[in-house]
Amino acid sequence: MYAVENDKAAFVEVSVIDVDAKEHVGLFLVDSGCTSNKLSTSIKMMVGDKSQLIRTLKTQTVGNQIVEEEVFSFPFTIGGCHFVDEFTLIEENLLTGVGDKPILGILGNPFLRNNSLVIDFGSHRIYTSEVSLDNLSFSDFSYFFPMVPGLESYGVPVVPIMGDDGGIFAMVDTGCTDLLVAEGALEKISGEIKYNGKTTEMHSIAGTMNCRDGNLSFSIIGLQEQNEGLKKKEYPFLETVTVAPVKSICSLEQCQEKEGEEIPDVGILLGSPFIASAGWILDFGANIIYRRK
Image 1 (tube, rainbow, N blue to C red):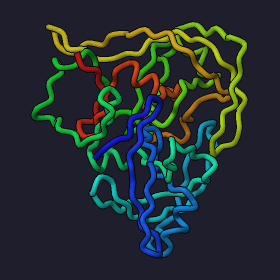
Image 2 (image 1 turned 180 degrees about the vertical axis):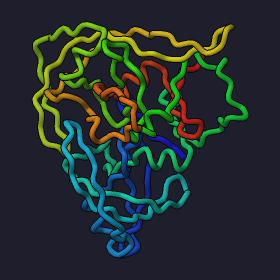
Image 3 (image 1 turned 120 degrees about the vertical axis):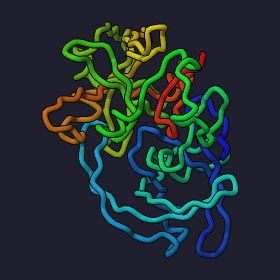
Image 4 (image 1 turned 120 degrees about the horizontal axis):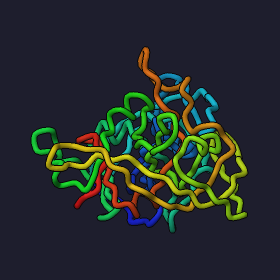
């Protein structure tokens, strides 16, 4: 499986056959923070009866708005491999093309998990995982984060942020090109925000939000193998962020919280530029996020 090189996001080239047997070539955005696959409404119309309604699905947007979406089957080809997967629809105006190739949709983390894929921004590749419990060696990693807790509780990969009252989680989101912070999460982060007077208008399926820009210091808690075994360690960062006027990215009411267990809010979206600069690799086969030594 091949990725299109891009400094801000991960894409795969996809081929779609319409009702007249004509081939259409475009891109799918690879989005680890999306809990479903998304398909452009115009492409859905092109394939006609090849795409069938399966069911309806309730999903949560940034800002905790709940929307009901129809789920369709959809056939497509990537790198000579044929797939049929489930997609919900997204309006074309929310998909921006790259060069002369249109973006036809989004591959969310269910596709990544079901196909045991790895996203590696360092090598500009998306490939099948070769890591398993049998050959997993923590000594090969500078540090790592297990994905399973986030996938079980939130449906997306998350990492813990150092903070007060247990801190918060940050979503690792390859489909986001910014480092987005919920305003309501700032008081829970052990760090400092300094606004720079700039503003950003953010568009999503939840609508438009006017956000403030600034610089935020924070620490991420990773695991590192030492002589005495696996130990937690803080990794400090100072990053330019966009602060959205929402309480959290993911509300506890929508998370799969276990009985008697309180889980922190998701208050930050770590976008693909941050993931790339941090040297992180997302392995959905081994269910870990790691940085190589």
